[in-house]
Length: 252
Image 1 (cartoon, one colour):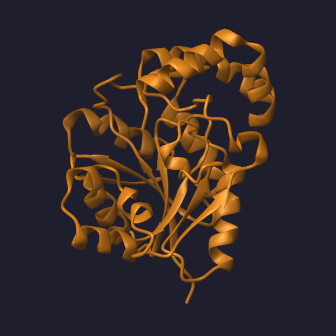
Image 2 (cartoon, rainbow, N blue to C red):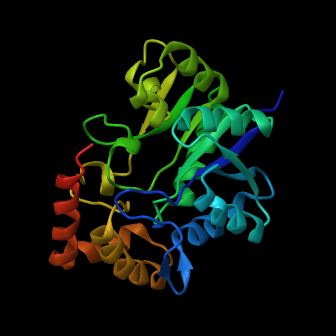
């Protein structure tokens, strides 16, 4: 039986740190959500792409964006994000989810394909992502370049095993925090990222938004090459300083 794999984008407008950050103009008139969906469309012929948002009235704008790109959408629980993912995957008959967070405009589709290839060649995994030099899962870093692959079965087991708010809000934390209960594999990041705890390509607040908005112009002009973009950051100490400041502010 072939695994039914789908890409689920987790998005809402109600960020407390920067409301509407996923729909604000970020690059060339496009929002972060526009950018992410356009990147992910390379997978559209093979995998369902689904926007999972909430039933909050303000999030209707996100449904409209999904419709604009002719991708699927699901409207679910505002607070229990784990439930939203389980319900979305169930609704679209998925066995496995590629989870995408909507505040990562520098998401690299090459890394997604690497994960898919590894997942398909290693049956029995519950969870797959990348890790840095000290073993921290990519989702807990500030890099914002990676996704994670998780089975619906594993997510349902999390639902059964814990009601803690932390684990309901952060969909996969319980899985990699309990490797004795799940089949977890973390790939080593590429060397140029592996020990870079000073880089931040994810967006929480206005400082991130402004800093990365400027950097995104360089990134697109250099064929979305993250390695080149990192070299550019290293040569621009103010950009790097802003990243480091917000890493300290939002230490995970």
